[in-house]
Each structure stands twice: as C-alpha cells, then as structure tokens.
Length: 173
Image 1 (cartoon, rainbow, N blue to C red):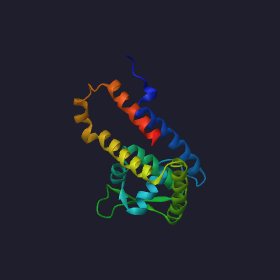
Image 2: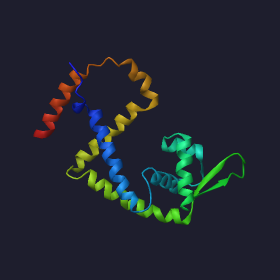
Image 3: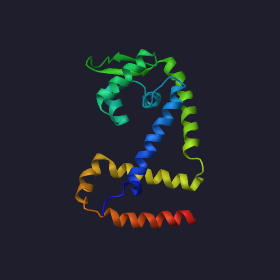
Image 4: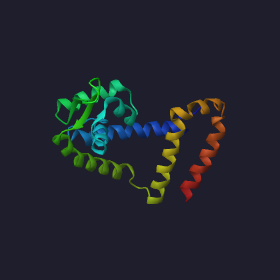
C-alpha cells in the first residue's frame, strides 16, 4: 500500500512550519526584519558579544548562514562586528543601541504570532503540544539520528492506524 503523506504527522508538521515562517515573515516585516534575523538579535540580547561560530551553534545553522544574517543586520545598524581583543582571528558580534531597541518589537511580534498560532487551543493542549514538539525535536536531532536509522523499517501503516485512533479520541474529548 502506498504511503499517504497527507496522514503523516511529519507532513502536517512541515506544513505548519511553512505557515509559521510565512506568518512570522509578515509580522517581522513590520519591524524591518526577515525570519531568522530576530533570533540573532534575541540570542545577542541574552548573551552579547558572541563569535560567529558561537552564534551558528546556538542558532543551529551553518556558519555561512550566520555570516549572511550578521552582514545584513550590520548594514541596517542593528549589530556590529568587533575583532576580539584576545584573538585577532575572531570577530565578536554585539547589538547596537538600535538593535537593542528592536527587541521589544520582536517580542510583540512573537506574542502576536503565538496568539494566532495557538488560537482555539486550551492551555492544557498548548502545554502538551510544547512537550510533544520538544520530543520530536529531540528525536530528529543529529545525536539520535543514527539510532533512528536502525529502526527505519517501522511500518508506517500501523502507525497510521494508531494515529487515526488517537485523532478520534481527541475529537471526542
């Protein structure tokens, strides 16, 4: 039997992620940012003066991606690069006053996005969803990828039946 991607949780998750990114983009555009750039600002707000490598690890992206984001944010005056006093080969990234001023606007955009995304969900459901998504994230992390490869012969059709039962139970609850 062919795999029905429409019933796959991962397909729904991917579709939700695309919708979230698009909606996030429309909110962030109002403050002059693109999706992902706000994360650089938030990370620096938490721990200013990180190296490009530290930012890449923290954000979970490749170094060239961080370089591109920092360059664009720098052009707009939201961050500045400064050569490390300890090691001239390293550049540290700092928020500017203008970038720091965007943090409150980013927080407002995120709160608005959170309200929109979670509309119609009870607090208990939100907590459960957050927990489930953390588990999915953990499952998909590089550290557990090798372990999951060993289990690659899992019968998706059996999982579909379990998923359909769970869906019915949620609808009747």
